[in-house]
Length: 412
Image (cartoon, rainbow, N blue to C red; front, side):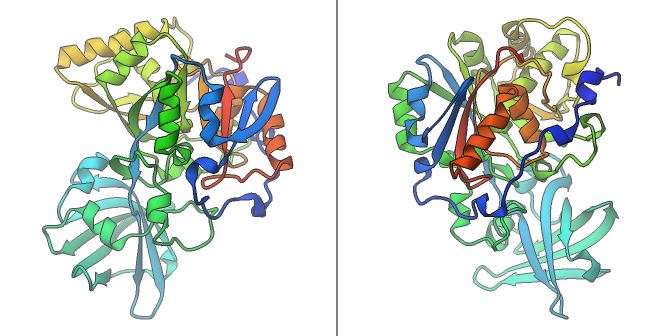
């Protein structure tokens, strides 16, 4: 695929910063909306608190949040020798690949997983028991490809779904940079207050700061909100290991969008506020899906697909509402009110934003695709914003503080 060099040649070393380990938040604040809020509207960078978010937003704006729910995707097994084996469930393989359907399936199922201490597990089955619920779970390694494993799970009682099995036996999949053991409290705090649809192995962390009080203040300001679902995969933590972004393979994530959201995006007159990089990625993917539909794409019964580099290819680009109306036409032709898709979209400097005007997000890891997205949205001021946060004792990453960025019109 012929990607313009000004995109593919972006050097990852230009999108990094020094993050001292002690600045990574290991625990959440007791009250979610008391986290600090960095507000960046070039050239001004200021500090506030998240519960005052509405003060910085325009009446008539439409806020979009990701209502995915984190599943307890880490399973801890012990061999008879005492060796500890941890299995991290990534995505389903059989009998279905749709994550929400897969979590509802009965025994047996097969998932793609990461395995901690895999060198101690050469063959045979692993098993664990939950004596309180009488759950007995077995895991069998079927194959390995690179760092990932195909694992078959079976269990008793057979009336339990795999989602219920994970809820009973699993642990919260805290990100790798939080080095402590997951606690029972993480099951609640590493979950947004509006989480609904099971499927993520990482939280949409920008949403962790929201409380009923914050939503009330947004409503009083005349700011409406809607939800979409994107199931966050472990690939969100994958650093860019190549020298230029053109060599990076972006991870794919499943999303679900209903007709009411698309209609709201068409009909509203104000700003669109994306809460989190996951909401941003889904919203922008909707534009490119609409473009594909206008050009004759028909996904059929399979999830709609958005490729990594599609936005960077030459060709005529319609206005956003024209692309969104093509999705409405697709709903009507197919007699449905929801759209399932998978997106591998990568957003890097040089990307032209089509739908999102304002971004609520957390601070992201150096050399990550999430940081590249922020740089694309905010422009070069992202460096000053992150330095401001470092200089003023902000807390970083998943359990850390939040940012409010306004789109840099010069960049897009």
